[in-house]
Image (tube, rainbow, N blue to C red):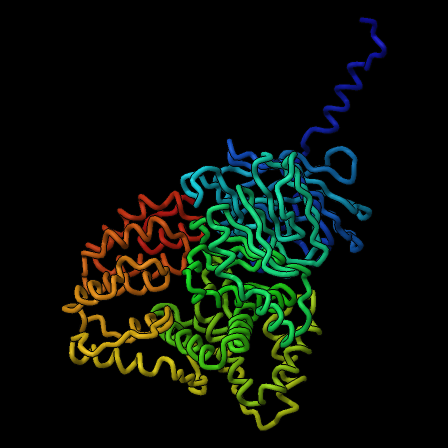
Length: 622
């Protein structure tokens, strides 16, 4: 064949040399601020474009992220957060490679990716791939899914795990829009926290757009054998095929939830609200990824008794997603508001008695948490946390959620619901698409509500900056649960179930009953309770957890096979943590707990796995 042209060897060598990886000659000083290395105070991230291939065989994501930045301050470097990522090359605009280096790895926060840029740089492309053990990524084998036929992938980016699947400014203070292209096998569907398909396509290439600015912890991806069912004009449910109908039947109240929430706190700003029911290893009850809540299958109880969790995740569309905590020390601004809003949604749908029942149970959980934390980590009972040098997951407790909610309930009681609702609408509008810290919120609260209502006496500093639960915490009384308390008291005193009537008992009645029993008073009637009500064989995840706690505390060993089966099939940290803690309190129990964990470890997400390892005193690999 005739040569049409030739390229001199010297030109080829020059090209290869110019495009090889060059280390940064003089690295900038690297510091961790708010759990992030990134220099978001000097370089603004506006938008990112993600292009990834999903490789189930090797359990990796491979591709690139292109970051649109504003470097008007003339920074010499762009600093991103990474952890467990393999960086292949970095380019500016469409040119050849630019110098880059990785900083020293730091516990929890990973490594800084330092990229050399210039004052005119507007785009930075990072080519990379993940590793199979990346903490945000859960690669499920077919056996670990509900359908048992196909693998499944889902991400969990909160709090600081987005950096394990894409280089980014991984801090809640940074909000950006994004587009993405995800390529996978054509037999799977890909979904993200963005505009989503409702059907599989023939080529396995899916494109996404999120045109509202979000923080990195709300970046989300799921890939698997997924189908969709509409629940209304702007909402629906995704799930594996064998879970789809059950899930859709459980969430029939979703349209009314969206309507109720919008009537109270302003128009729903995200277009659609869909739910993806994930396989059991998902570590949380739900994750409020915009437009697509990730939900645990443990809320599919068959009687809709646990759907308040959906109200919680929906409420995040305002508190957390619309207005975001600026740092993880301000976590209560996301969760306290959301629990309050959740209860308001449930009150609007099911009435005040139902909402009071939820609040009573929550307050009981808070008091149990406070008892433990006041003995072991009293500083963590403050609403304003100090998580410097710690994993921000340490701040995920009933303090942020329920103490935060009770603070807001107190304000409502002092100024009246109408004024409080007006203030909340004003607050959500003022900080829409922005972040806020505790001090900014308190100043806004003082200037726009408390100063206008001088008779509303509230010791704000005690609630925010001091330990424990203030004495003026609202005392919620539930008529629905009063008889349950009397029944538990009688069982405690008589050590008998004679006359115990469970007619009309829902999940919440059972939970309140269990939590009002004295563990050392009921050992002799455990067999009778189990025989009469088949509690060990329950299929309700909430009832199971609380009953199994009583079994461990009362050495009711006949329940151990059921407890083991439960811990092998549930990955939700809310349930794993108390049960493994109960086992760890005795030497014999610790052995049992470790044996179960050894079997279950591979099915747990890293978030849950790390928590259980700490409880069982198993050294982490990190």
